[in-house]
Amino acid sequence: MDATGGPGLDEAMIGLLHPGDMGSMVGARLREAGHPVGWASDGRSPATKERAEEGGLADLGTVADLVAASDVVLSICPPHAALDVARQVATGGYDGVFVDANAVAPTTARGIGDVVTAAGATYVDGGIVGSPPVEADTTRLYLSGPHADAVAALFADTVVEAVVVDDRIGSASAVKMTYAAWTKGTQAMLLAIDAVARHEGVDAVLRREWARSLPDLDERVTRATAAADRKGWRWVGEMEEIAKTFGAAGAPSGFHEAAAEVYRRGSHTDNDD
Image (cartoon, rainbow, N blue to C red; front, side, top):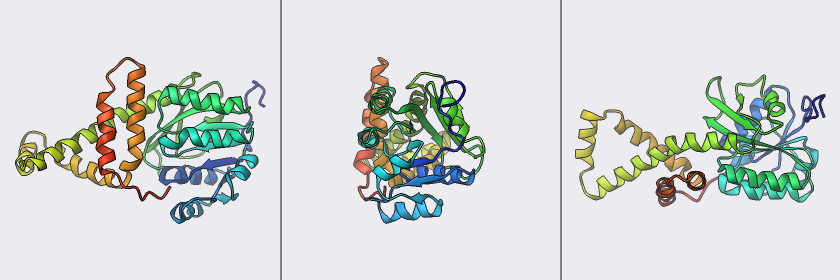
């Protein structure tokens, strides 16, 4: 504990669950800043192992062994798995700092907090905006909760910009949800529009009209298609969490329920996380 009663993390061992495209790069940046970072290879794919090795992450074998060795556990996983990951960590009575940095609704974030704090852990809510961190000004990690400052300090010497929102659990997740509601939500709408135009046989005409009156849309559809081909399977759960966020706020949730279906119909199940 530090002088303020919060967790002291200057020499913390960080356990990363699980190093996908984003998580592996976040872990690599932390390691380059001098923090020991571990992961658990048990049950993970060869592609995940390759990413972890490229990032210089230490393999501790099983999740149980990783959790036992870690002062901080950082969860960066597909949103549909976030609660299960928290439960897995809590099973062993983890009493370190648990940071959930997944794309989940504030209500889900608070539920995750209830799970890990019941086991004895300190909980920090997080949400990542941007691309996997390679250079400065590309990736923000929003954090909230009473101990968010201590986690933010871990990223001081990295290209990841850690932003403390406030001391309320759920605020960081709310930032992520409302941000992605626009970026990935409108992307799904464009994909649906393009599919309907192709079904009706007017896609070429529509593209010509876009070129005249909305010249950025053709390129946006191309980028959206490529991105959804790679990661749409992961965004199904994210859209469902955004719909939950809207519903809890009394706003229409149907926009993002439909977006989830767009990504579901085009998703691939051969993900490597």
